[in-house]
View 1 (cartoon, rainbow, N blue to C red):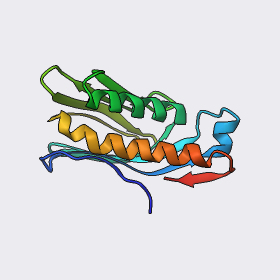
View 2: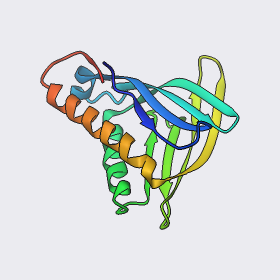
View 3: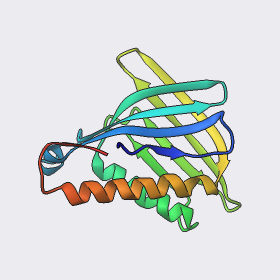
Length: 151
């Protein structure tokens, strides 16, 4: 079963889901930055959007590390940027545990974009952080093989 990375809030009008993540081990090995693709789904108040986004797996790993540090209050921000830089997700945590989630999704196939921003609290970080760490560990374990991995 594929991993679904979900930022779980107590409000159905605030949601961020990263799913259908495909990692190309062979592209990682040849240092092609277009090695990871994922579907991003956002609900932010009355607005919602979803699109496929290309990432570099190294950026995914860094995002995971930063989220883990944020959940322990040792880091204040974590960002995940697409390879082209047009899609971005940023988490910002203040000293009181308030979490700001903001970003932009771009879908060139339909010439659409969505800027989003919503607030939640730091308790939402634990679930998405743990799921992301497990997914990255799985890819690291499979790096000996070639081809695509669906995590």
